[in-house]
Length: 223
Image (cartoon, rainbow, N blue to C red):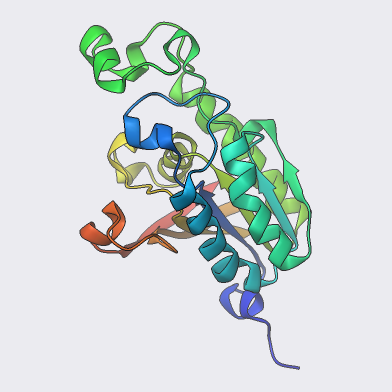
């Protein structure tokens, strides 16, 4: 029997996880620190449909998402294409910016020196640890298969640097709306390997297309 596309892309003995950043919202374009209720705009819905065409055909066993509306709206077309429901996980939530939610990022940096220094903002290490735990649990539940997980740029960047500290400052890593990262969970020791793929069904003229697209190796790290 011929392998399915997802099977063909997955190394033997590993679980393939596509880690997605949600589609575009009006808040993404404003420069404000994101909050709870932001929904996809028309460009974001178009990115979600393109993600469905690209990832729904990979025969995922599960589609997971942050509970935030923008993440669920991005995940739903992928899940529908695969005949699945979207399972939400609070550990995939966007970073909690506390009192700074909705504030202009530049003004926060000017006042506090960085978003990380803003009083009440969730520490990056906390974001990283909860997201890595969530991804590892999803990978284990879908042992040897494929899963799609939709989260947020601040979360995805922390995950990628957790798997490869050599990537440097998480804030410098591109994570355009609608891009996806390809990760493998090795089933014998729960270590992660893969590629950070700044690519995917982005819109013509987007920042990702202006920069170009590329892959970057991610060394193994225990999850």
